[in-house]
Amino acid sequence: MHAGDRQHYLIGLGSNMRHVRHGSPAQVVRKAIERLHAASGCTVEAMSDIVRSAPVGPSAREYANAACVVGCDMSPKAMLAHVNAIEHAFGRRRSGQRWRQRTLDLDILLWSGGSHAASDLLIPHPQLPHRAFVLGPAVQIAGEWRDPLSGLSLRHLHARLTRPRPLPR
Image 1 (tube, rainbow, N blue to C red):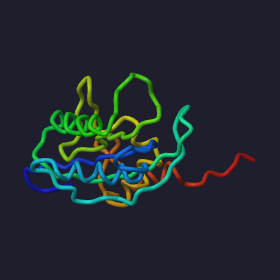
Image 2: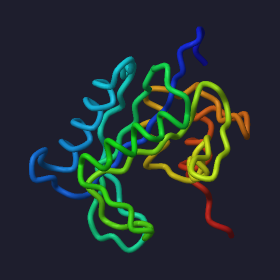
Image 3: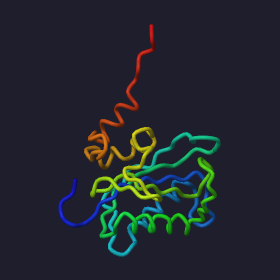
Image 4: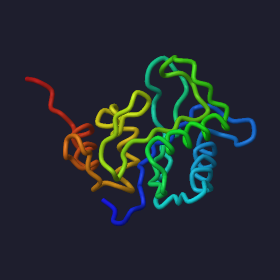
């Protein structure tokens, strides 16, 4: 997708809790994007709109979601440490429980280097093809970026997930 040695990451962002210093979930997402950009050698090259989405699982609070493309010289492992440090700075504590309320959730969705598999990081994100609340913002800024596993563009994955389906007769 991108030329040169610089690495590019598609990052998904979400928040469904107010932060005492940063404010509403949408403001938390904006501040997190600023933090991604402030990292040494990182540049946020594109940012989607911030959209509202229904919670997944038992959480009752609506989410603010967005996506951004970050260019940097970090390896996937270093980028994971970077996004985890940002989450931690915003008060995120990993409890092992899925789908809880959270001040900030950052996910590495895609990487310009293709796929990556380690015990703590899978790229592309395994749930990417199944989450309209992630694909919608991602399509705004990187619709032609292809999932290295399926070969399908984000635009195509989003269309598959969101197209109306007729009811059986």
